[in-house]
Image (cartoon, rainbow over all chains, first blue to last red; front, side, top):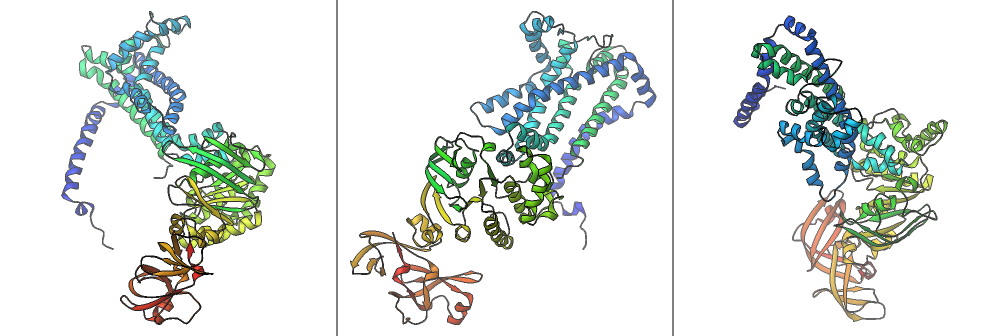
Length: 274
Length: 348
């Protein structure tokens, strides 16, 4: 059988679309790749050994992880309810959940201060618990959670929707309680989507600047006063060193995100059938 | 025994109502109806998967209407099997036993036993994704039967299977039922499937039961035009009883008079199954009361049989084997005679 070359099988419209698609792929790829390849490994290593840098990166990874775990505990049940039930106001509720995506992130920080600030109810509660909020780890976590939770909920909702509801029905008729049916059938079958949403949520939280800057410009963590990594990048950029000073940390952040994203998605979808 | 009294299920845009059924222990009961009739809703209401608005469901002397599905002792098998895709076959079958708290040492013997009955022992270690439609159906049956349910609910179990496998699985369903004797409620839209398997059949349309009886009664004596059409009686006419003699009545169906047997008078409906009509080139010498001359207007090839439309008028659809079709040398426009007995006409 003669194999026809791929490009010879294409219509003109398909060729036009591929060219346009290639432009957008290049648009996304070139800036991070150029940034990465214009920085030497030695510079990267020395930057990473800087106490201010590594404590800042650790703080950001740590806070994004806590935000994601809380998001999982609170967001997955909501995603399941939204996937399985039709009720009055459901569309409105789904819209509400996506509000953080459309809100300017500095405005998110201000809004959070109106709830969690020292003079407000939740802020007083957190202070009385000894947790505090402004310029604390809790503020970074809450700000990250606010801006990134829609990614987890939406992804988990779609994952639960993709699980045939009759599987749960069969499980129930076979003697499984609703909890057992959820834990043994729905959750294992939806885990890839939930995991993928968690990775997205973590990555979005990790890269958050605006909201975190407003509520926690300086955080006390491990005895130092680091700031979240995206804030430190901005501080370095605004320093006399400018673009060159910000470049190594920028490269580190891009690499961390890329590695985490690729590794975790490979774990999630590596064994999955199409 | 399963008893359903005045069952009502409201799904907002669909209402299942006035459902009254009594199904004997060990009976193979068919719920028959077209798409959208409410068959699956009824089945799932029995399973406890839909909340009922009113009425009662009794299974083996126990009122189960208010019980959760896991407390009802039922097994359900859906059209496309819906096996748990992340569990191997053995785990699929064992799922119910584990959920019901069956002692660990009893699980494997019971799984092996039901696998032997269904002849799927060789599939136990396989993933559901690698099974054919027929194999999946048998695994789904094993999963439903292993917990020893009081009633087995089958929702269109043969619809998603290729015709050849369907016939084999149909025979196996009958055999499994004979061996295990489990009360079975089987939902289908296929009349022939209902005839082949059911001890009794209930016909559902638009959320209501329209007729219940043994398959032969539904086939020969449909109580409405809907059932007659659904039972593949292609010859359904409206007419009026015109002459009455001691044994027969004459029914006028628009100029043509047919002899039938009924106590009804006035406006009636008639149904006549295509296979009850004899077709010939010359008038037949027989005791059949109805013999009409007509012209062939359409011939539809259905594989082993041919559907011949003979315009008298009105049009009568007859069924002949491929061999008879060749021997009679039939073709469109040919003049033929159709003959049928008065007793084969069902008047309602």
